[in-house]
Image (cartoon, rainbow, N blue to C red; front, side, top):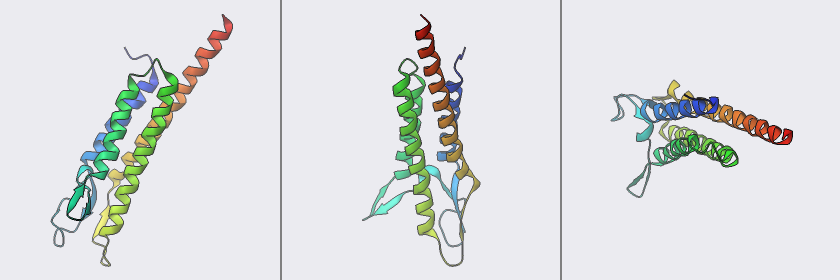
Length: 149
């Protein structure tokens, strides 16, 4: 039985980030590009000197990993609050990278569009902040109970 609401928020953030990596984030015209259905989150790469760097996968994957670890840190609430903020930073970095790659694909004809699935990163940030608020609320409750003893 789940007794803490922040666990639910953290789990939903993991689901939202997983969908953020799986859904197409940038749609392109199939006549001009090789990706007729668009680029999924994990397919958005940065090319430099012939190498492909999976920057979005690294940022979002790190955020997913931190959030999963965060679920099991319920005994160390201070560390749990800190990892919430680190996870938020990585989610924002992933979304900024997607927007940066979108800007590099733009042509004057406007054949590249961002999809609504990019909102999932914002939903994940919101869920992380809600989890942080409830973790802090638990911390205050426990400190107030210690004063009553």
